[in-house]
Length: 383
Image 1 (cartoon, helix red, strand yellow):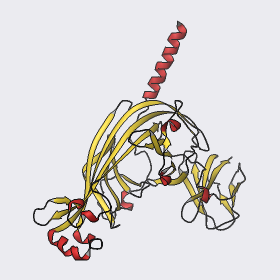
Image 2 (tube, helix red, strand yellow):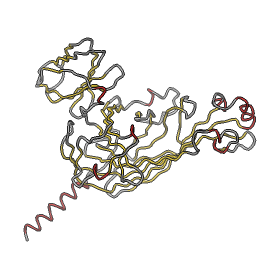
Image 3 (cartoon, one colour):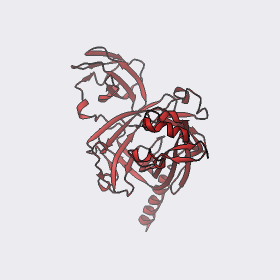
Image 4 (spheres, one colour):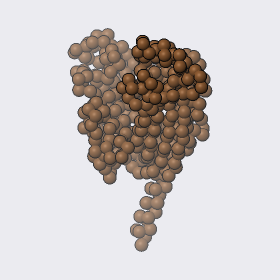
């Protein structure tokens, strides 16, 4: 009987401990912090990965056999670095997504809000600055097990009809400008979030974050509806480009465009972003990519692997970097938590890197080419 009571007590205690994982304020970063992000993806082949193979009962993440691997860097920037017109002064930080959009966030003790983003205008490629008229609340703090959240945001940018001069047939342009005077790029975003599971996960493979972690899972849908509209000079009403005679039937796609991203995000203690994020189809039976955040995996794209040596290892005050086929590489050094500490330009086949000012501990290095693509990586110990 005592054993049964003890077992029940331990199970209850474990459940309480798991439930204590909560997503608190996310602005604990320092502006300028850089963290590696690693994507395993089928995206290049349009294929998918059966979800049962990625999410088994033990929830073990190892070196998944995805055919495409991309190493990227997440950097927290001051909004002023990209906001030259002062459009996002309310934002507390900015960062760039893997698709090249610069997201401007307002983060407080209570919530994280998306107040606008920058990118390229569809069809023209010109700069785009969208400001939310209805701010999208991404999450409230703290977020805990069984919490749910929904919100809708709307952003747009208006430009003069002349931005379409190069893509509207010349013999029809004068007719269009006689009827319409403004182009509006409109985006409506909806987020549906459900913190539906907690437990433990194990990361194994060539990673500095190997180990077992308690997690809180966020089950999220991100729904994007985007449209391009023209404003009538006479009524002031906006019409979708697909419904404009002479233009709609020439478009390569139907407007508005509906895009839904479905994902599981595995939040763990002491990580300000999910440790692992899995993007799925809307039925949640196929995985399209897996993102490891704040962890350096030495896996690199096969066509970019570089032969090199880093020694001595362990070391005391320096490391020597030897690259037989040297061609303008750089080396970046990270803490074991994944924070970028130093970077150096390499000038020859053999380069000596001074580490006297680094405290003793384990470190990660990444070698990049002149295009900032990762071509090699590994670990070393300073004694």
